[in-house]
Structures are given as structure tokens and as C-alpha cells.
Length: 105
Image 1 (cartoon, one colour):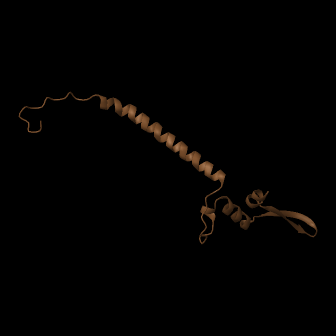
Image 2 (cartoon, helix red, strand yellow):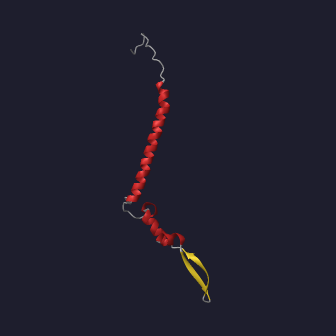
Image 3 (cartoon, rainbow, N blue to C red):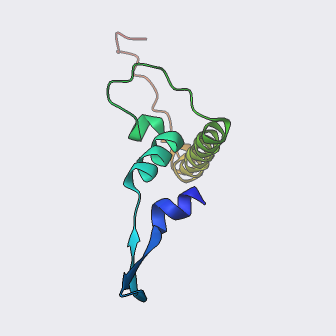
């Protein structure tokens, strides 16, 4: 209900001579600011707050799921890269025999 009031507003009726002639929406910016600050204090919190914020369990799980997906994508890309470039690297040139006059034998 609070989200709906903050986003969609509340209707305010207008009367003229006792008759309803229309209405407009009154939006509650303070309520919207409070809700945003509660949902993500790092982004919408006061700049002067010095408290550390670890986040909610829901936020932590969402960030962890995103990190896991990123790691899995990176591993899949590395595996594909290994398949593509591994075949090229396997084709090595034949070893050249060392010269008997070479000082590095």
C-alpha cells in the first residue's frame, strides 16, 4: 500500500458548490524517498551517514547469484578459448636439431 501511494499517489477530490467536479493525484515524495532509502541505503542514503551497511539477506543473495553467473560465464569463455586456441597450439613445428658448433649445447 505504501509503494502504491508513493508511486501512483492518492486522489484528492475537488468540489464546487458541493458538487464533485474533478480530482487530482497527490504524490508523496517523502514517502518515496523513505522507501528508496530503506531498500538501498548505499545508493539513496544520506551522504553523512557513517554506518557500515552489509545489506539485507535478499540483496546479498541477489549479488551472490550475479557473481556466480559471472564466474560461470567466464569459465565457459575460458573453456571455449582453450578449445579454439588449444588446437592451434598443438600443431607445433618439428624440433630443429642443434648445431654441433653451437655454444649453448
